[in-house]
Length: 163
Image 1 (cartoon, rainbow, N blue to C red):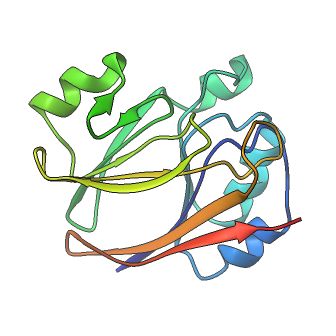
Image 2 (spheres, helix red, strand yellow):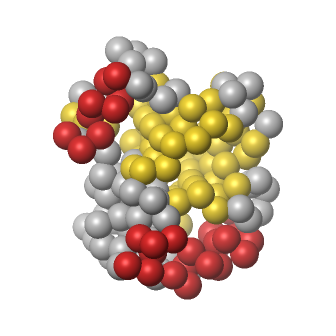
């Protein structure tokens, strides 16, 4: 079993509570718009970090992280892409991949809107953790934690960072 801490759209905002809430996690996943190499390095120093770059990320982050991160973990095919859309409205940049080779878990960011939705037509779970940073139109900053074991998801939690 792996416990995952998931966040997106930090936009260079560091919050010590990331470490507090991800203390029980085995890995941290960042779905893009990290905003600064410092944020990525601090997360990676705390737990193994899997990430993608987002549309606001500069060359320093684009060199370090891919646009699409696809990997296997605990019997689960995972795909992370910053601009991905959501079930019924997938972004054209990833739609063909999702339709022809759907992962079991698809994670995206970008919208700053927390969303957890199952796509029954593709048999995948979609998670957008919302935005953990302070920049954007969102009113509540959010993080997500969940577990993966033998291809199954459990214990999904939404954490609100109220300032």
